[in-house]
Structure formats: C-alpha cells, structure tokens
Length: 167
Image (cartoon, rainbow, N blue to C red; front, top):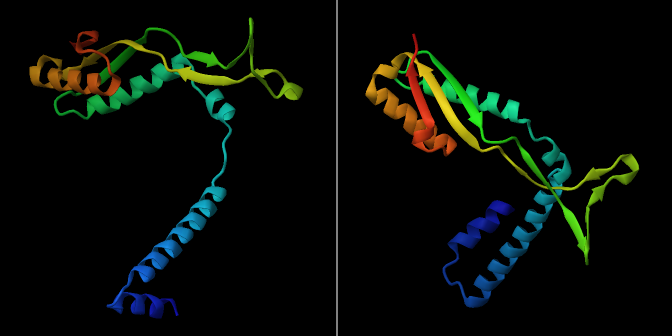
C-alpha cells in the first residue's frame, strides 16, 4: 500500500496548490511526531554527573602527553619521541551562586544525600609550554612540522614549544 501511494504521488502530473499544501502539512506533522519520539528515547544525563567527571590536572597532563607522543611519532622523520607538558594552573571549577539582595550563597543539590554545590562550569587548565625530545630534531623540516602540529592542536604559541635532539 505504501509503495502504491508513493508511486501515485510521483506520477501525478497536475498538482494544484491545495494538494501541495496538504502534502507539506502532512509531512510537517510526521516530522514533528518523529522528532518527539526520538527525543524521548534519548537518555537524559544530569549536568551535575557530567561536570563531576572532570579529570585532575595530572590526568589531563598525562593524557595530553600521551596523545602528543603518539601523534608526533607518526610524523615522518621524527623517530622516537618523548613529550612533557606543563600547565599554568590546575582545573578550575565555577559554582552556581544564588544572589539575594546583599546575600550570596551556593546553590545546593541533594541535601538529603549530602551537600553538593551546583557546578556551573569547569575550566580546563591552560598549557604553559610543551617540551619535545626526539631523534629527528636535527632535521629543520621535521622540527617545523612538529611545532606546527603541536601549536595547532594545543593552541600554544610557537615560542612556548621546545624541541631537542634525543641522544
């Protein structure tokens, strides 16, 4: 039945304005209902749970060093690579505040299960510098590619990236 409907729909030659508007209306209603059913199937993750899963500065540094080491070692001519990343500060958490006239207090969640302040935003640490030691550091082209890659990925300016030859 559905195939016949679409076959007749595509073969119809004399479309009038009323038919077109009716088709668009039916299509719109279908899209509205299908969109609502897709949204209801998604799992809602509370913002508090996702914000509390932020990683420590040490874990962030280790992850960044590991990722950069893998990427830089895949650059042609870089050879064996070691990477060290230093951070400007640790992760900073901003808590939501409720301001009433001259009084300011944190917004508290789950008072029955323990006092947890509502996290408004988590700032990742800013990278201070990146030091790279690799076998291919004597090749200017390789150094240039490494500096450009690290700068693009981390947002660190090129004067904060150091490359040295591995012994």
